[in-house]
Length: 155
Image 1 (cartoon, helix red, strand yellow):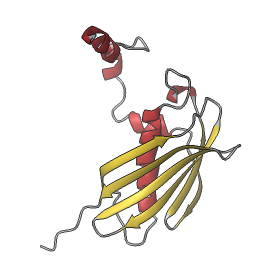
Image 2 (spheres, rainbow, N blue to C red; image 1 turned 30 degrees about the horizontal axis):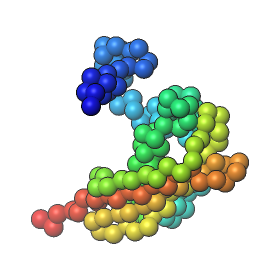
Image 3 (cartoon, rainbow, N blue to C red; image 1 turned 90 degrees about the horizontal axis):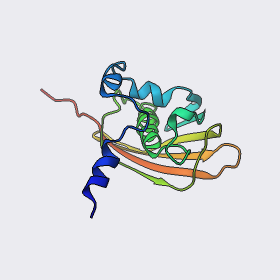
């Protein structure tokens, strides 16, 4: 076992940014960084279809779309589809999220992100989010997101 190797891996900074550099970034920069370039192509009850061209800022060390960026898009696009269902006024809070990574997307690839509301009840919503290469139709990733919708008090 090489604990130092693990420590070095987790503490490294591939961008050479210092803690001060990172701490000086704008408050709540994460969502705009992930969502910038996302285009909404279709909104209907229970379905949201978006597209985006994969930018270099969202690549992993293998030069493909980062799994963390994909999971963040499952969260954000998946949450948005909840609001397309009648009488829902909140996207709630995450209870569970999972993503199956099936293929890669590379810088310049145009991808489609389709979110569908599988169930939106009084307290819980479940959505699916599928990522496809827009040119080939090949599925890149599939996500499922469960959210707790705050139940209003009867007091």
